[in-house]
Image 1: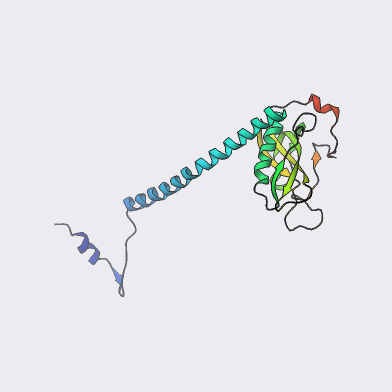
Image 2: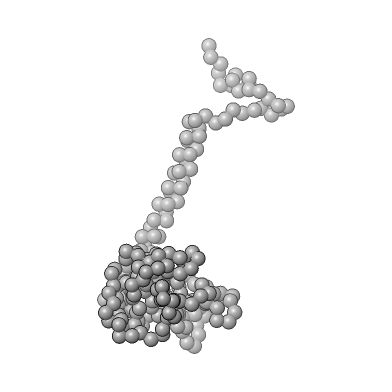
Length: 205
């Protein structure tokens, strides 16, 4: 007759008063792994509604800019992302875009053949979007700050984002990223004025 479980455990070797345990059985390990995966899945499912709400708010804002401010679709997408990013800023309460800030006459939408930026932002994009808005600081203030935003796209998908939002704690005129913005491979600096060529630009969104 095979030994019972209690008899088997009693026969396990001991060191002093400590009984040595054999490794967990395959069934026990599988049970623990299954429980762990279930917890991870539950956590993922919990975050899905928040992601869906965020996407819906983004799309609603894009539609608002297009329908009410006659925004270029890709500029509207960049602006909606900027609104979300500024919403997490320790400095600014929100950002607003003027009635014509996202139109072809003011938003810069250019073909791009190269990296979006340097370091972690060294991502190849085919379209560069630059827009300007007004950042309102937390706690109020006399005047809003002029903020500039860049969005890099490839195949109509945003892959990179940057802004001149001040870096909290930095002195002087240091901005987030600590570098100037350049256009394409030629490296000419960004102009504050927008030429008439803006009307011929196409948005592939």
